Image (cartoon, rainbow, N blue to C red; front, side):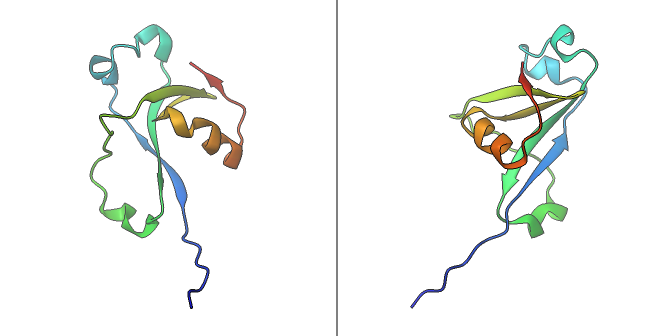
Length: 94
């Protein structure tokens, strides 16, 4: 017999480098407008976060920039709707 088990999962935003526009030309200075840029990740292993040294981006996934208040979050396009349905801030995609 198997017991139902729910794993904890969390979203975490990691600050990205200020010169990110060089790596992602679509994020021009005009679009960024001085806002801080973060990578938003989702994990079911939050206990590993203290050891994280980097955020990896999958080469086959599409990522989008989402404006949230005075920040820009980079996240997998396929997960944007799901993520905001879970924690629901008012957002405008950019």
